[in-house]
Length: 304
Ligand SMILES: Cc1ncc(COP(=O)(O)O)c(C=O)c1O
Image (tube, rainbow, N blue to C red; front, side, top):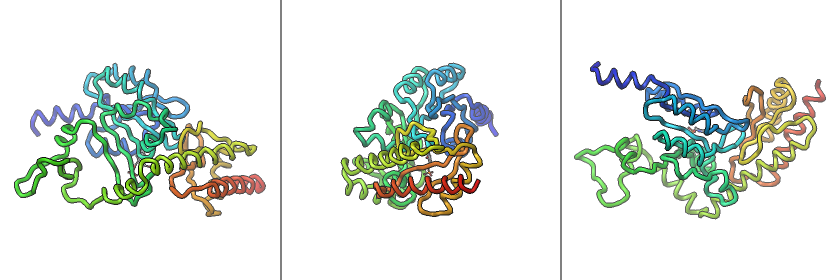
């Protein structure tokens, strides 16, 4: 191992240059592990899981090397969006690269009624989202958006003498992604967007958020059920008193099989987590979901 590589590894093991909200998705850590960059520094968040810009500022002030800040549009328990405008202003002052992990939340940007959530998001250096989530195309259609074309191509691109290169047009796919050979993931994504159109995509995303709001508000009205999140977007986190009861209700909902919701843990509590993501979810489905949770809770209470 030469001296340059040792230096690179020493920097790589210095976790001060990677920041992510306390409630970042685990795949951020996974990505850093793949890259050999170690673990990120968690930036404290508020009660909905939104990163606190003042804390980001404090932590970035402690670092002396280039930083990567990962913001999150769409917390998977609360649906909350990190405050992009304020956080990006802080990140810029420290020369950091800002990425938005918008697996499902980035789609809110398509909806005029939800513009307040994504305000400032477009200022990020890069962002990622999944068309296989909110857009409902088949797995696995991840999308990366990178502001600086050269940064993307310098990182991902390659030139070989045996391949035909697109000198004039938008560039070859293999200049923008890690793989050289890949199937046409863009085709189903293009087809879905083409058939829905701008308004169709907006209506689909807004429909998911409205359904989540309906489920949250109707269950909040049931005595003994707590909705733990503010309900800005497509997620609802429910608790039923103590953790044991929440786990029992979760098991009952799953066993009954009328709807699928998963158990999770958030803010030190067990929760029943609702994530509305299917395009076909309608008012009847909202009613079915509410009734499934309500009756599971009644059954668990009755059994005590
Ligand atoms: C916020 C967030 N980031 C990243 C991911 C990972 O995405 P994928 O399952 O497409 O790898 C998810 C998936 O649930 C997510 O919700």
